[in-house]
Image 1 (cartoon, rainbow, N blue to C red):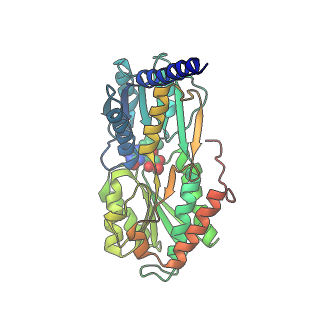
Image 2 (cartoon, rainbow, N blue to C red; image 1 turned 45 degrees about the vertical axis):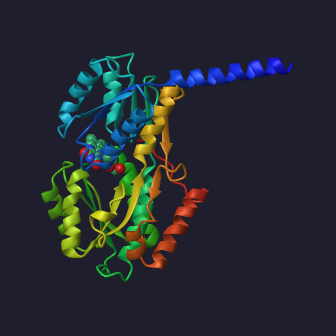
Length: 337
Ligand code: RBF
């Protein structure tokens, strides 16, 4: 009996071992709808895939940058897919699921994974959307607290600004309303000034638009504009005003002006979905949503910049709000996109 058990245990162990050996390697194609440099969600996407490949011998990653001309993305995605080389094509941004859905008809054997977007029902596509109402809310709440504080640079006007690359449903239905809700949770009379850049790279125009927002009463601005955000950084430094950031840890770009960053853990998400895809457990056809509770949206409150710049009273209000979201007391359901 004991011997039979031992043999059974050895059999189980070798099965587990072989499962591990056969799960990877993967050939991964990363389609960047833009340029990796200066856009943290794209850089995180590529980094997550590169880490997966580094940790799984025999796996490989090709990172393809499609550039800023959105009219070319479909053709470029078709070309990449037509290579027929990739087990999974990984991409990211809210416009990609619709494009993938179109291209997927031409390549019924190709599996696609889209982060930062939402689409359910295509058996060859899996998507994960970030809860960006939540992200907008917590960032807007901080902006409101800073704007109404006695910090140098804050004025009496209840006004804050956003500089956006372009309009799209996630921006208009999640990010802007979330940011506005956060401001209004501090004071219902807050006004939000939204300016549109029209692209994701023009730092000169971003500087002008951000400066114009500061000049017309906003003391805190949220730039969501890819590499153009360098213009907003310059405007904040020139005017002695404030910025809050989305997507990544940006504090070091202007430690006197950047009062808060709410990051997306895109690198970890990319790595995790590839690990599950390799194990055969990624639920293709499904659309998931992740937020603060799951650890993929994270307010970065341990940075020395944040700790030095923000008064303790503001930091403790932020702690309490984040706790309300983590405990489920405060929830932000996603509307139909
Ligand atoms: N974000 C960037 O940081 N860089 C980009 O080049 C960029 N291009 C985008 C293009 C389209 C068509 C859309 C819908 C979004 C784009 N974003 C870009 C925004 C990004 O997906 C995300 O919404 C924001 O970074 C906020 O998390």
